[in-house]
Length: 315
Ligand SMILES: Cc1cc2nc3c(=O)[nH]c(=O)nc-3n(C[C@H](O)[C@H](O)[C@H](O)COP(=O)(O)OP(=O)(O)OC[C@H]3O[C@@H](n4cnc5c(N)ncnc54)[C@H](O)[C@@H]3O)c2cc1C
Image (cartoon, rainbow, N blue to C red; front, side, top):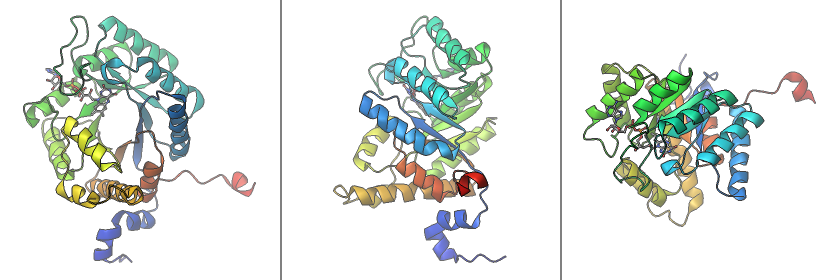
């Protein structure tokens, strides 16, 4: 059957047209949140969780502050998600500033309360990104060791970090792939990437990883950006490149947050659509604890809450 959407229009309205045509092939989605610091932040986090919950994500992850600084808040947020929602929480856990014994106790506690997904990370040094990381004498040295510990304690789903443009401390991409392979050999079950905008770099990385024997699914980490200045700062620290076309899109919009938000949604949806065409069907969204952009992007991609049952709809 010929498509009602001409090719030129498809390039502009690609994902929108495709989601309207498609009978909703399920995409796997997941969302990242960070633990709130204040009662106001707690309120906006929970508003975001409630708004996104009906989209039935595969899991929602909760970050662990640099240097392990949010241990209690991460724990509390994960527990509340378990207790009060239908969502599967994935707790981020790092090796920083903790002995093996302490980390193992946290792992056991997570398993006992019903957590089945953990994002296993080395973490950044307490001095922050760019500082020199020195593992504690009695701590886990890196995410590979932490992954091994998790899998030895219980059959967790272990998610690990992936750096399609290279980790800032890495000498070259081959090293990143060796590290990823080591994490998989230690029992990692899924990779989640650092956020990126260069989809070709991501695709090249995945090709190389597959050639090196990495077979676990790799979810692209998608960051819908509306604060471009903030993004530039964050990207510099994480080793994510900012393509010229992205800078161009935001050029001159410092005083126009509304247009920046519309662009953010469009860019992220286009990236996902391109990756979907390349065969990727799982996307991990960095929500920054806000639902609106991510919710809109999911709709564009054809992800919907299930229709209400007939009795409910009639009520
Ligand atoms: C999806 C995602 C979520 C994140 N969430 C958080 C968070 O919640 N809290 C936080 O603090 N940080 C978080 N980070 C950042 C992360 O902690 C940093 O990028 C950190 O610098 C590296 O962590 P990693 O787990 O990727 O390290 P690793 O995979 O352990 O790699 C770090 C270095 O350790 C060495 N290494 C690892 N394995 C081996 C091995 N088998 N043999 C020899 N050397 C090895 C290598 O030199 C490697 O470059 C996240 C990153 C991502 C991508």
